[in-house]
Image (tube, rainbow, N blue to C red; front, side, top):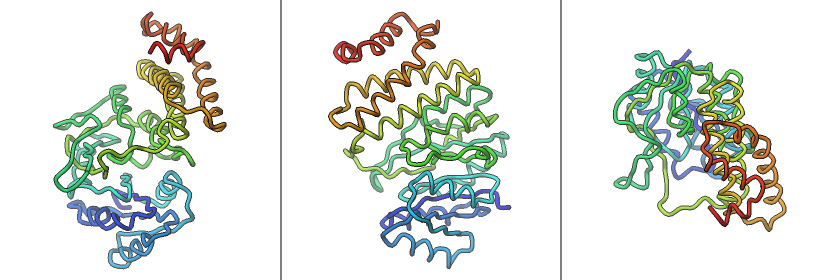
Length: 311
């Protein structure tokens, strides 16, 4: 068994794949396998993957019909033989000591998850940290590990593979990491933050996610709703409260920014409203929320148009 399985979903990233794969193969840490999952690419990405396989026996390639990011990651998990899993998106790249620093941090602290800092990469001389970076190693024990719910991306994390035993990425969903990260944390005992800037997330200044408050955004609302229910059910109440607040604010944003002329969007908004109504009594009775907060909850529940005007 290798120590780390690196899983990279590939879909039409021929422009970036070499920088991604080279950053992995040139790691100071050597005891890993690289699983490239070609998710039905229509450009030259699949051929590039096969070339890497032919020159480095650590590389394994899976060619499959297009099923989306979650499906590709799930295929990678099934094929992985490592004790730990590390995910990288095909247009991103990592620092040369990423695997070594994360693996060593886990071993040193007996943790189940290691988290490095993420860096937005706009160009060789244009980068910025994001996702609550830390400057030195920090260990999160007990429920403090749920502090990392604020950065649910799986791409800057190394996981014990056993954490995924009964967990799969959801198919045909956006915000797929938000759907499952709370469950992975629940299965873990300890999390270590490495304090190192290791994962480079390729970005473009001024870019806007198309339909951000339309169909994609409702997947995020569903993911937060499921997170809140899961944490509440498992008696992690303080972080469940945060999730309920997040659900409220997300639905309020959706009401205020969504164009509801399209029938499908109307339907999605209605489903989100039903989810909010299901947890309304729970949050209204919660003593941790202030009177002002409860007034907001109440108005959104019974008069969302008025809520949009006031807030």
